[in-house]
Length: 263
Length: 266
Image 1 (cartoon, each protein chain N blue to C red):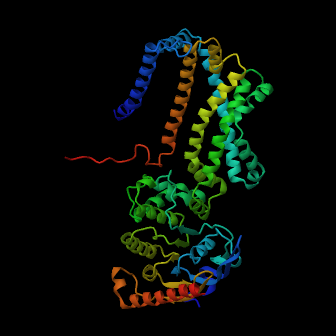
Image 2: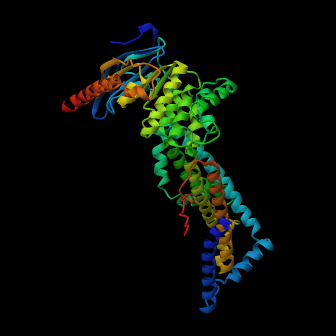
């Protein structure tokens, strides 16, 4: 019940925004190649998902996204742990990683298309490259933020390095790691769309570009809505994961007490 | 210099231990020279001004930090790393937030690969003994600071160590809880008869608990006083009313002031 009420606030904001959209389109007589009406967006979505034209695009983007995300995040976890734990590895590669972090990865997109072709491979690589960094940086930061007193405690009681890694550092870094994964999902989506913009015959990004060229803005918004849905669902899944995994971090959101009035 | 116990029988001995840190500003002597022998089964406190290196001595005994010179012996053997026969209680509870009280108390048993069924029984006993019965399944964030510290105390005993190293274990507690924990610790110690090396900057606490109190100077630390506390046991709240208790506290306070002051003038 409480959650329903909480959800009512942003939903009403959304309704107002949609009403303003629809109202201005009708009242100001905006041509549909500038801003389509909600009905046109709805129609595009209907055509797309009920008649089935969008599914293959959605599947393409989702596949590229999930593979890239899995590869990028997996490498980030592994390499992040190595850099944080092994001093030698850190010395060899950390400077490069910091340097690469400040390069806008989408700038590499044309290069990656050249190397990996027009198919799904280039999108997977681009997504992996983009979503690698936030998780990688957060793994390192998370490992470093682990209380040295707790590590000393484990050592004093005879725990091996591996045990300390497994029992202290990984769970201790879980919060920042999941936060990194959360950023990664949004960035990865950008990677997938940019890859499809540049060169693709499928995917929601391709759909947007194609529809925009034909001034079919209803379809453009239909695709954007689909992308937003992927991003929102992904982020919400990770937030739920965060709450479940890092259950000991209380306070903050929703944790504040309110005064009960007895008057 | 030692008040009790000949060297070979000592449970714990610091032999000419020195420690010097190398920093960017140059070398920084932290421990000038400490030799101290703690008799088996005795309760010895190290008292000293804040930042004098008391905790550093404990870390060396725990095998977490090597000495620049000299050595630490546990039951006659030179300490080269963490050992199974040592239990440690820290200033902060240092519990794992993602583990229940029971699992936290079992940390040393898991780390050392002990028989978990026996360890679990023992952990339950210890948890009850420190007054946390019924909280075995609770998580640290559900406990008060005092309760967390009790869990840390139980944890130090779970692998039945010969020597207990306690690093200002009650420093984070309020005054009332502090005295209650001190009383409980004495009862606990009397039953287990382990050797305890207790680091504190609380004068009354040191006198109340110990068989012997060693006073360290400011950095670089050396022993400036070593007195036997011959108050009758078992001790309770009444002990603090004894004239001898007050006299001992007074003597230590003066010594501590002198030790701290000398450094400030230098």
